[in-house]
Image 1: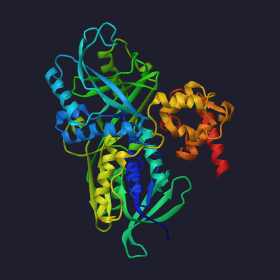
Image 2 (image 1 turned 180 degrees about the vertical axis):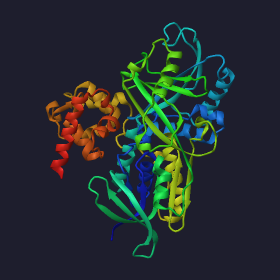
Image 3 (image 1 turned 30 degrees about the horizontal axis):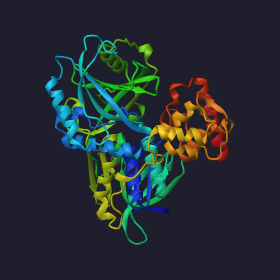
Image 4 (image 1 turned 60 degrees about the vertical axis):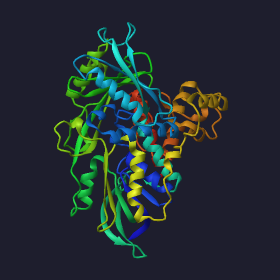
Length: 501
């Protein structure tokens, strides 16, 4: 029996699904998003954590994608200043790779293809004896892009969707889909939603369905609609490693590899450097993706080619891998497969829109494009709105101003905690600290820098259920947690779940 009805059912809680849910709910549609694991639990939390135009995409003549991406940098800087901020990139020049004139031409296009308001222009630079690079590297270039906490971007979009009335369900899979009609004779979908923890099932009627399952998009499409197989998807694995900080300074580096690829080295969580990414075709289950020894060696080799400080496998403190679903263009090199997105709307037997590809930078524009395609189905929905909206917690001027305000409002809050919370929650810190009068009010310190109050907030407001949800997606505190601290967190979450059941 159908127990609820919605305008739009979105399957998949990565950045595309969460962005579509927020956009649709803000237009006045009733929305239900289901995610079989955690929000941003796969590809969307395993990116290089950049909001960028994609300088190397210019080589493949993807001017529309680059232009759109460059424009989105400014939109997201304004919408989410707590989790998106400017980052200056240095590109060392080595003879024998891309010629200098090509790099200069590419950077000129990069500066002028999109609307650049707050970010400084590119320029040529010279590296002096204080540079962290090997001595023979003297010439280079500098340009601007942005950093983003990718997993938190997903969560904030889900929170924005919820603010507009959307129903967000994690650990809930769409396990069956069949055509049906509602009480008004409207043709749509009857979906079976299955709770991954209890096994309980619910039937939901949806006027339209969006398949935003990321690397599972084709598998889900074949499962739910075996008579209408989706487009083939090429899965490309990207892996990253985290090492102790390679150099002082806030700039990132873009390194050209002999194979034509580029590798980023990015300041990460104050004490570390993030290095990535690799690109390999992948054919196994995306849920089991892991970095290989060959990928670690590949990343270490290029860093050791450029930097004075030498790295070995023993320096790798953390690693993560993700699988990007790209439309199969039958090109041999995975690096050359387009990062652009494709939307396929099938109206028969009922509206089903499938999302292929995409990159985190353009998720908002993708969501708008989805709603434009669905507009004939929902003629009364409101118009575009997200380009001027602020994501939850982002309604403040600068990090410095917000930190000073919090220091005044909560003088007892230790500075390290205040600074981390500014960059994770923005003005939502006030919600987290509502009713708390001193450090004791934060409850037990479960592990380094993590108090019971924050865990409760993440569980109550941000759908966190497991230790990984807390330590790697809502925060990055897993970098400092040992096995004992992790076990303490797991015990706390189990006891909390038992009390609420």
